[in-house]
Amino acid sequence: MITEELRAPERAPIGCARKNRWPALLSSLCLLAAASLGQADVREVFRCSFIDGADMDDLMKARDYLVQQSEKLGLTDMTAFVWTPYKVDGFSDDFLWFSTHADMAAFAKAGDTYAKSPEGQAVQARFDKIVECNTSMSTREQIYTGSEEMTITPPALIASFACKLNHGQNMGHVQDLISHYKGVLDASGMHKQFIAFMDVPVMSSTDNDLYVYGVHPDLATWAARGAAMQSSEAGQMLGRHAQQVMDCNNALWWGQRVVPPM
Image 1: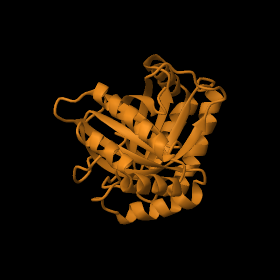
Image 2: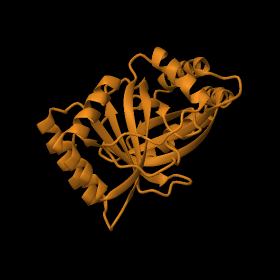
Image 3: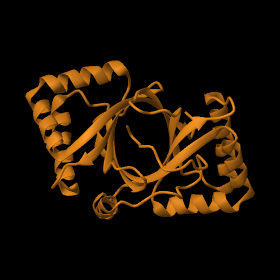
Image 4: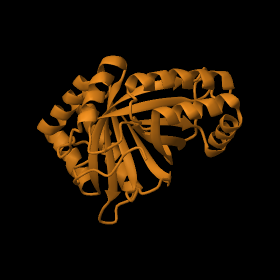
């Protein structure tokens, strides 16, 4: 899964993590990631369940209110995405909400503004009426971009991998794997319209070291790409390389951007 069960329910989806732990390995990875990823942005992750009979329509109404109030506050740079589970083992909530900020300074500006303004508090109250969420934070790096601009009719198909590094492996080995991954995808010719990302937890109670996910236009394209990779020598070598570096659980989600509205 892209995120694990966190310790305690939190307000969402504009609040920030409060009751999370900092595993020693995770802390060292985050420091390394911050130094090496360069263009990584900051991502708030909310794992949410609807309450009091609320549903996705209510969430989109709260989203509309968030967008309106954010414009009043001059906060127009944030993007947000919602994922709903398709094939996800052990996920008992209704959806994931991701709020993405350009960097830590942008995240802090948005957090302070929402916390200290009537508009921000009103948005928080609107969400608190319909969802209960656990929250965490990560850095996000785009690790692959196809040669063609993606054209997707929402929702997109998201293939995610929640990974733990194997003994003796570190982020340097992950970067080597990413280079290998890029080369294989470029050579396959099947990923011209494809993007992939890596998230590294910053504040989280997860035991996972990183998350990797790819965005496909639909289920048929994902299946065709997977079959081609599994049947090719290059794809099999890449699979063995990945297994050497980390142990992952995979999942499938339906996802779409919700801020700005599409």
